[in-house]
Image (tube, rainbow, N blue to C red; front, side, top):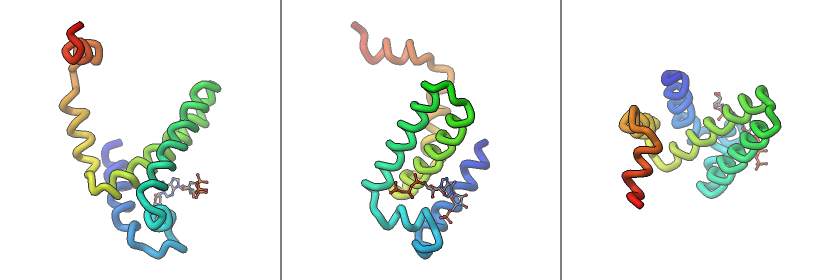
Length: 106
Ligand SMILES: N=c1c2ncn([C@@H]3O[C@H](COP(=O)(O)OP(=O)(O)OP(=O)(O)O)[C@@H](O)[C@H]3O)c2ncn1[C@@H]1O[C@H](COP(=O)(O)O)[C@@H](O)[C@H]1O
């Protein structure tokens, strides 16, 4: 899983400067960060809609679209996927309930 995402991250970084008529990544990148962010939002909503319809295949496809567009956005911000995975590693074993309680002692 990690290598699939890393391979895709590498491809996306290479394709950013390709010919926009030949590359979706280049075309979307040329439209600006706002458009990339909008696509991430759209794919997130489509994933939620598929989940709420108990559409398993739909949720898989929309989740792939979401991860892909998130990687395009991270590349545009020059944030390496490694940084996001490191953050998840940092959180490993820390219960979300305990973490929230530590943040909000009341
Ligand atoms: N994983 C993907 C991937 N997932 C989804 N998509 C594209 O994302 C687009 C989303 O389509 P939409 O209809 O939602 O969006 P749109 O119509 O283009 O845009 P709007 O109408 O919303 O403005 C489709 O064109 C999909 O083909 C992807 N395009 C590329 N990749 C990967 O990125 C690599 C590089 O792609 P290119 O940059 O096109 O060479 C490919 O080899 C793949 O590995």
